[in-house]
Image (cartoon, rainbow, N blue to C red; front, side, top):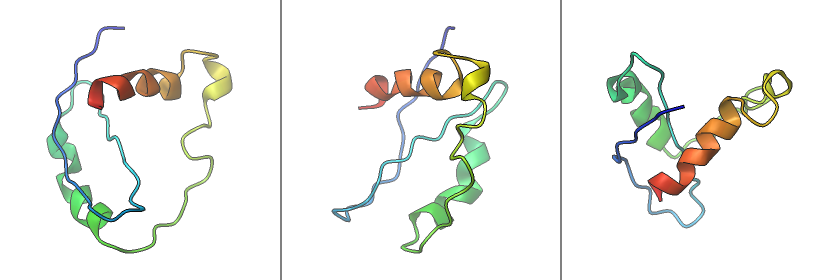
Length: 77
């Protein structure tokens, strides 16, 4: 599956901050995330949601959305 990545981001200098990779589908744009960046960078607690995005893993063994996005991690670093 062809893909490309653009590196842009917000940085949190807290020692225990977790990295978050936001991806979008096609057609789409990083503009979709502008309303989310403020709340995501505020130092507040966020509720963990359900299966954490792993609900469709069995439908695509080894090639589902989680594995595809995980493959992009090396490009972001």
